[in-house]
Length: 117
Image 1 (cartoon, rainbow, N blue to C red):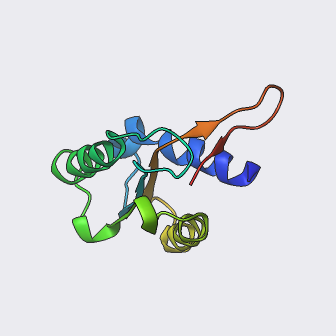
Image 2 (cartoon, rainbow, N blue to C red; image 1 turned 60 degrees about the vertical axis):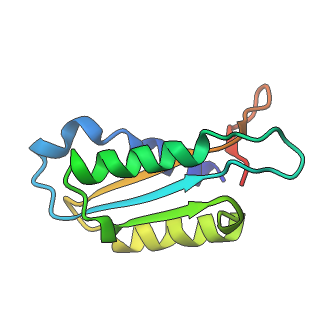
């Protein structure tokens, strides 16, 4: 899980350098979970994903077909990990990759942070 958190932080840190790196292709994985079984609902999570997708397509030049969206019940742990692996396999040198997660997360004291799919 530490590797996934590090990957997420690394991929999200690329926004300011896109125009200067000779990017070949742009890829994104967007995850939004509004409904949880044992936690309060987050009604804005799916809106966050829609807004990020809109920003990536309209302002950052991402092809819509290069953006994978997982929401609510489709955003299982297995599906998220599978799509992260597929994203890693699609990205090549000078490509840009973005991972966005809207949902619950946690960071117990003295421990690594994690997402709650």
